Length: 249
Image (cartoon, rainbow, N blue to C red; front, side, top):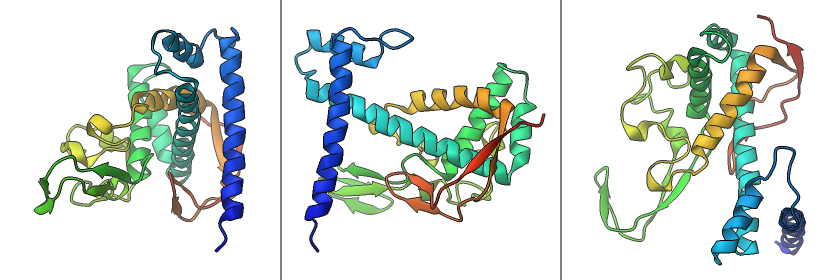
């Protein structure tokens, strides 16, 4: 098959991304700041003044990574969360019944919603890893230099680790001893030294958004997906159009 047109389309898309990133970097270098003052680009540019390895290319890559990875993963997680709440409305009511607005109990309950969503639909459903040295894994010899694939999506649905794994139950992350203690049983952002650097940022961002949105609005979906699509992330197999209705206490 002729892949020339596809390659040209990708190159054009990358050129547009580069142009937007270059414009943002030059604006920040010129002193432009957002409504809340200097942001990430100013931090990177300040670092470049002291560290020559912070080239414009590296700064561009950092910016694009934050915008692409930080946007899609969080948005997809919240999309799944609201789809799960649509099927399990009692989970929303239970979370909002935990303490008052801004209380530690309310925050814990909201974070449990997020964690249970990430258990079923982890941000990265499959993770490539490279064996740096010879090892043995589950009785199998793994030679140094071997490429491995780790799958949080399947691990999180393993009935030997998670009872009734297909059931959406945020209480797993609140009730003592209700979740597996093995550190490899739950790793939606990876695990170990190569875990996602954005883990805490994503969790905090999602929590803050839900603290405002969950009590105020309820999405009413006009159609819902029937299955998941496994691409770079795990996403619904079609659009999820919805209207926002005032939340019923």
